[in-house]
Length: 506
Image 1 (cartoon, helix red, strand yellow):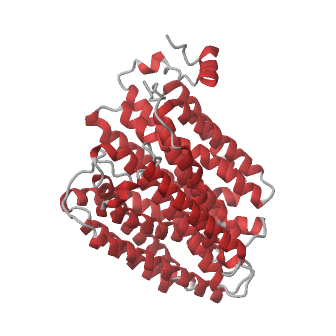
Image 2 (image 1 turned 45 degrees about the vertical axis):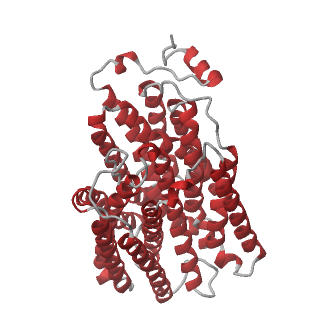
Image 3 (image 1 turned 60 degrees about the vertical axis):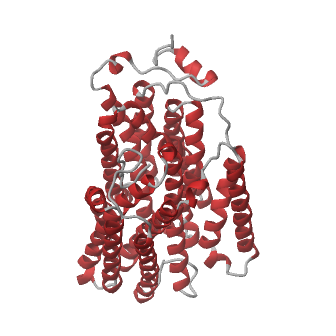
């Protein structure tokens, strides 16, 4: 019999033997116990999305605090997303082998430590390093959350359980910019990270006392260590080259070295995944046209979304002299509209299939970017139109993301839904990283002979550079729409994972 979670024996068994403690009997015996589990998972969902969206509002302030160029500041966001993309499939696989409860709870501990250290960082390189530590904890949480909900809920209740988790993510994504802006205007940038600490402590305690034991994990299964070692440098090499293009110059040996590392590691990773019997990511799924095109659209749509998330705070603060709070409130409109329209996109997918809502969603997104292009002119009277454009972009993304995710999952065989979800998440995170890196590089290049910073520049130069970035993002949105138009199949139907249409699937 396992010792209770309050006992020293439970802590010792967890630390030395990797044994998961049972939940509190008083909680596990409740008829509504499974909803307590969903609520516990929702804490991680809110915390992760608040941090991801709040960071975008923080970047203009960090440019001032550390007197750094755009390419350096953007690594605060890019490094976090790359680490998430690299570690999520690793921890997802390890959780299948060793259990989810301990790894999920350990994720909160690492996230708390990384968040606290981020606030104490005295240099930008240290801040970026601690963001990676924070992301490793986030990957432990994210790679287990959906599986825990699916494990605890009855089949007929899984949709509601996953829907609550989606709602928590949408709340976090929408609240993050406003919370970040308020903190920057009142407490200082360090508190944007320290605010995670009490929420993370609550998540860790509830995870220890509430979450169920995994059951019988498959400890004898093989783990793809070669793939785990290769995935991070493969992803980082390409994104680093894109992000540092302006800072290093197109002929820089360091830039070529980054590209070479990315190419070599990507080749070795693909070869490893094809040869191993238990791959980290089943790349054979990408041979299915519907799955491949859906993930390409997934990549480009999230590159567009997070390119906007990166650009708009700089534009609002530098061009319109908005306070951090005002900029955060305006930016919050985008994820709020995304969250509100995501269920509508799911309903349209059920009736019409993926092609119609995804194409319409990207057309609406392009319309929002067009409004942003013409109205982002530095004239205060047009600021409400800039805000309107963010709402329109959010509507378009909300209509796109949910049907596209469902189409990706339904294109995978029934027994491959876990692997399909891993590929989907990696492509999403890579798209986010690429969008931020691409927007940062183009913004710096468009500012011409400046030091790669947006500080102390004429408004006209900032407006022109911002419009160049908006054109790039509109091109990415058009590409996502075109891919959606040519994707095979268009019939309506539920996805193979049980109808999961999270606006930001973990």
